Length: 148
Image (cartoon, rainbow, N blue to C red; front, top):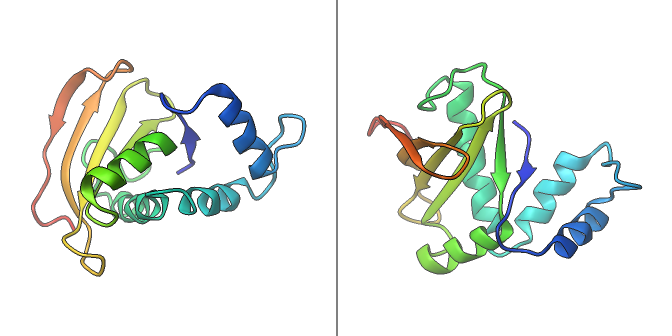
């Protein structure tokens, strides 16, 4: 899994600032970009919870339990700092996250809502669905109550 930036919130200038902070040189990412990106996202409002939710989904993916995706699918999760901050205000810092992913060879988006009842509680997959590039629902994906 690789992180890809997609946002309707920050302006383009914010993207250039993120690239500078992450260590891009002349548009070329640093070798340790994934580590820098995780650290950067974790420091943002709602970011650390988003990373924890992503790690939970990554584990489900490795076990072949992520609805709509096969164990060996190459996917990229998208992060949106504006959306993370808004979700953390709306749902609390440890309760709910919705994470979007895309197969590297597929224009459709896969959305996963994960939830936990407390900071120490286990994550559970609450909802999964596919949408087109415009965000229109294509299909709800079945979620087993046992996925946690």
